[in-house]
Image (cartoon, rainbow, N blue to C red; front, side, top):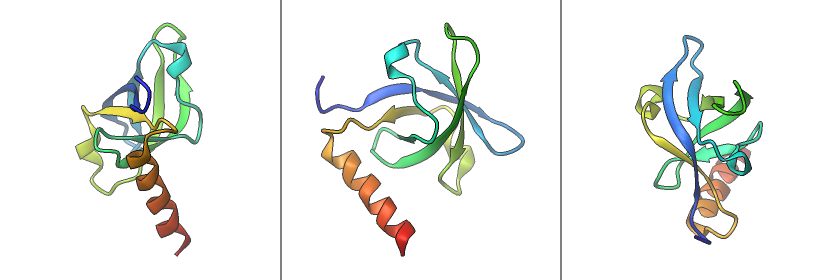
Length: 101
C-alpha cells in the first residue's frame, strides 16, 4: 500500500556490545542498507543499521539503538519510512534538526 511504511523485520536481542540484532524479512527488495534509520510502529527513529549479516535466505542486521532505553527495543517490529509517509518524514526531520543544535 502506497504511503505506508515497509516492515523490515523484528528485533531479536541485544549483543553484549549494545547492538540490536534484527531478523529481517525474506523480501530482498525490502533489505535495509548500511546507515539507514529504522522506525518503530509509531514513526519514532529507534535504530541505525550498521551491517547486514548472514545468508541471503535468512538475513539479519546489526544496528545501533538510537534510544537510551535499549532493552525496550527487543521484540518490536521495525520499519523503513516510505518517502510518501509524512508522519515518518516529519519525525526524521525533527531528529536531524535536534542533532544540528
